[in-house]
Length: 326
Ligand code: NDP
Image 1 (cartoon, rainbow, N blue to C red):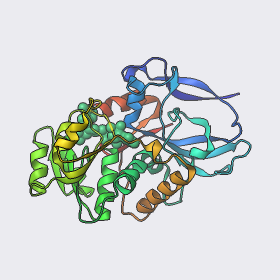
Image 2 (cartoon, helix red, strand yellow; image 1 turned 60 degrees about the vertical axis):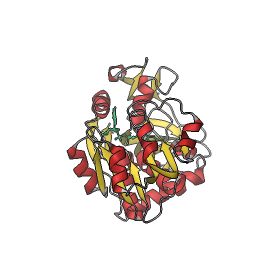
Image 3 (cartoon, rainbow, N blue to C red; image 1 turned 90 degrees about the vertical axis):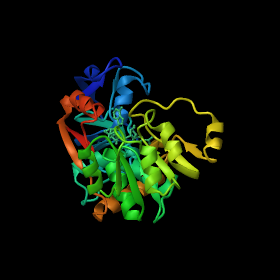
Image 4 (spheres, rainbow, N blue to C red; image 1 turned 180 degrees about the vertical axis):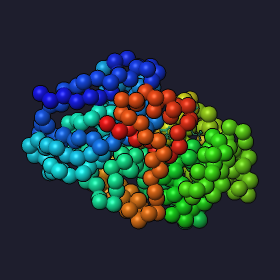
């Protein structure tokens, strides 16, 4: 049987648990495809799997996103064919590999307008921006919204897309350099939330009214303040834990702060069927293909150096998207 190199981990912990190993590459079975990766996407969720915040069965592969070429397919595969350029952003775990066998139904064909690195950078983060701002809470032209970590991977895509929709974007960022980057990607108002009171700034920008929706991938550090940024009957979208998971919330808190809505979504539930996945991917490919949204691949690492990529991501040193190159 053929073999390839992959990053795996045998115990949860810091970036040092990630190991570069030789693994078997079987032939694809029914419904499966063998994909040779051109690029692999790095996402914050990878750190949750590695640390144990999101439990996985050990030992485990890691990574949910990649782009490459289909080299072989098993019986009954209709979604893709040998030679197709494809990408995926919803796993299963094991994307940090030179090549892999995976369910063909999770793959989408890439249009010629999307290069491999952009594809590996945008599937998970771009499909996330798509469901957050187009479906979970469809943002309308003229709305003012708050997006946390605006200079991050999901953040830079969302800022551009929100601007394209005609919204006004308030974005929190961790440094002046990140503020400049977010502004260059459509963020109208940036807040240095490590130094400034972001609730007061949001109130100032909105004339005291607050925003109809907060998109929050930061979690613990900003959750309480984010509720205070919402207008009456506003929607709190807590979708990530970069600073740690949000503690329990009493429903009466939502009542006291203005009949708020609270949701804790995940991408998998918004691309749960093949038709949802392809419709969302087409929407994403359209805004990227038209140039309305550009994919900022601001860091690349050799795949075998994935541990360093994790260190930099968790130390808030990265901006936009990061890809790992096999
Ligand atoms: P990012 O590129 O946005 O990286 C995370 C950013 O969070 C950092 O760059 C940093 O930006 C900010 N941050 C704030 N506090 C901390 C902290 N204490 N430690 C580290 N970073 C911090 O990552 P992604 O784009 O990959 O993901 C963004 C968020 O969205 C993550 O929480 C991720 O888990 C979540 N997510 C959720 C999905 C879902 O469907 N539920 C799908 C995809 C992503 P700054 O320095 O500007 O504060």
